[in-house]
Image 1 (cartoon, rainbow, N blue to C red):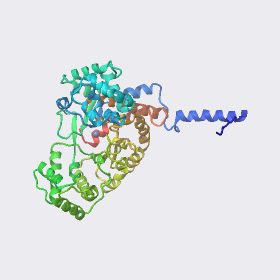
Image 2 (image 1 turned 90 degrees about the vertical axis):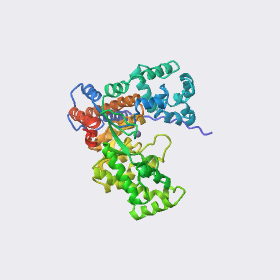
Image 3 (image 1 turned 120 degrees about the vertical axis):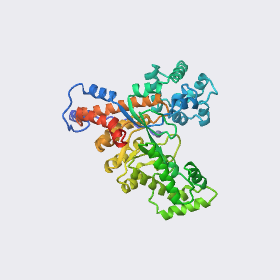
Image 4 (image 1 turned 90 degrees about the horizontal axis):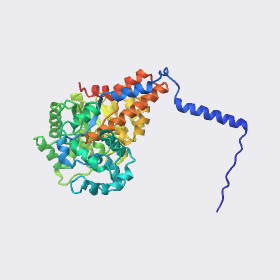
Length: 460
Ligand SMILES: [Zn+2]
């Protein structure tokens, strides 16, 4: 065995002074971060900015909230309500089986038995932000500091009691979270309240592989789809009906299923795929069907252009174990941004982990917007790091800084608290370093938490 002797280095007094000066300058550089560009603020700015952000009315750009009665029918009202959306991904990532988890969303076991089963996986995964938001929510709503052997029954009882109160949603969303409008991605399960506005998906028109898929769409719209032209007419009918229902945008979640590159396929090529599909008894492969799928994305965008409606695009991370992450890189969409300069695209979820690519796209294309829905519970530090960068790169009228992205209101509220905390922290730092003035920071806060979404989706 070779023994490596430690090296003792001798430093003379002169070198020590140089080193001390280096560390002094370096530490100053760290707190100052950049050259000061604006006058430094008056004392108390931290509290004033934080208070301003905390009282701000939010426009929540993305939710999947289920109507109370539907949610109550879908699972027992116990602590699992808080773990069944997003925390479940990390609980499974930590090793719990999918079917084992699914059983905990039924009434097969008592609350305590459920807790015993899930506890090792919860303990192993509760460090992630998906877990943290649950702890934040129970603390803020019920004053319960942790999920433990002692508290799990109480949390469950409190949830059950809350769901017997018809005003629970209003209390959470309006009073506690101070959400003015929430843009809902829910399909048919709509809630009637003027705070909710809706987007709809047309992904089903793209995600076709077989004759059966085509027939199912035809049946839904009461049309016979025997040619590509007929298929396009069905899409147009579906679109005009959605516009009648008052949609404020279209959402696409196809990043879960395929690559985000949509070539501008010639109609004749799309027709050839359509004919082949219509003749075949078996579904076609993705490679075979891709030209038709790509063609239909361009037709959907043509509808967006016709009605002047923006598109919300899922980019980056997939919930659960989905597609290859590289298939969701937002840079793959650039051909659409170039081809449809007059259609507005809002790229979702801070494109995690492609924050740099998102920055370049939202900066370079006037029709590309940046949406931070889901992001603070994926990683608050990523959100913080990139919000710093996005405020330096992207015009402030194109950033939307909150979307809860939850099935249940309790976690959406916890998420909103995390969003406010990160936005306030970033703005305080921007003012402290002389990048923004206090007034400019407050102007940015109002835009990114409220005004931009109202303007883009023409909600008011
Ligand atoms: Zn979502």
